[in-house]
Length: 523
Image (tube, rainbow, N blue to C red; front, top):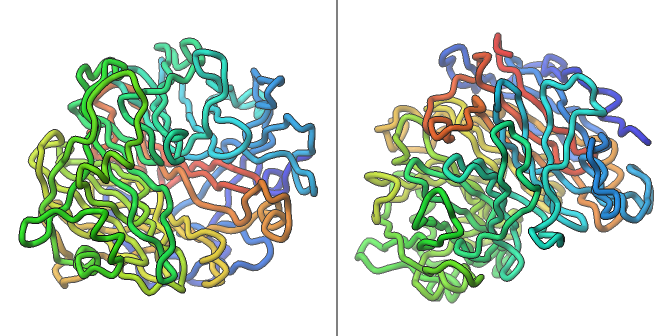
């Protein structure tokens, strides 16, 4: 077995930001011992680069692609944490390199005092879910296969998003693909964190669409954020993806159906903003206004489908119902301390400097409601993207005021900027403040300048076309591992420097390493 260079260099050690000469003056003030001094710049897209962290943080790898699974599905090539070996190819840096599987978003859970990290895998011949045993000191025994088959024993799509649903005791998985492939799958876990039977059940009532973000609220509703790309226009993309909320008939059993709703945004005159309008005029002034700090618009949830058994095209249904599409929304999370009344989600934007369309750089949006099941609310921009800070994807709250957002700019924009991806912290201020007192969005403070490992560099310079190129930041996750309803993301105010709260992210592509961040005097 060939061990990737990053794994050899950083096996269970740490990469520390102290190697960087100087730091930017921009910083986030200390809060409960949590502080971030900005890394001065992104890493250039040149050769092999180390990850660079804010000086108050270190990181240690908890898993990497070449780790074998303790219970492999050898017949289907599901044998390693980050590789599918069905074709018998070598694990790294070869013209016929094995298919990377790209572990994606993270879910940290504690069962019976045992600490686990669950992930779906985004590419490769089939979808699967793994579990990292964070208490296991032997790397060869650390990663377990949780699921790679549906109830009929067939493969299911590759997985992007994941969350823990304490009402159904399931991992909810999302497949980010257009209908009929995409959708939501449930994998049930036993009380000890093992799979009940290992099957991933498609939840038809939640529809089929390019879902990535998935998150529960305290009422048992499931919130979904969709990205299906978008047709090109003026160097950018047409808005064509939606934010959804599924209201279940029985929150303990999602197979009993319910109502899938999509978010509709209203213009100042009260009329709905529709797909027909934005796709026929992608320079609509509404898009500019929506991406202007200090503005807000009223929202309404419109029902796009009800039922239980038959799969349906959620994207088409949302368009027909008059919901409002956006430009590649990706992931969302509830703000701690708001009792699930504030939902923040990212919009990736066009990820190309050639775009001349409004909203090209995306941003982070705030959706405020009287309660998570309310029919109406208001939406506003919470953090605005620009050329240097864009491609926003995964998102997590570090405290009730500090929002961690990571980039997925993509190979094209990384080449255009000559800059690899970064992770940012936005200090949002008090929950009652829509602005920072100066009439503009909070400044992004770079806490991570992602590097590029040897395997990703090889792929970017001409490796197999079925593997992605430059490393991507994904799976930023802050949790105390509580698997009860009290542990829903957003229910508690995190304290990342305490021993009970843990932070993870995954360096996708290349060696596919997953890291744990240690902040200040914390873990």
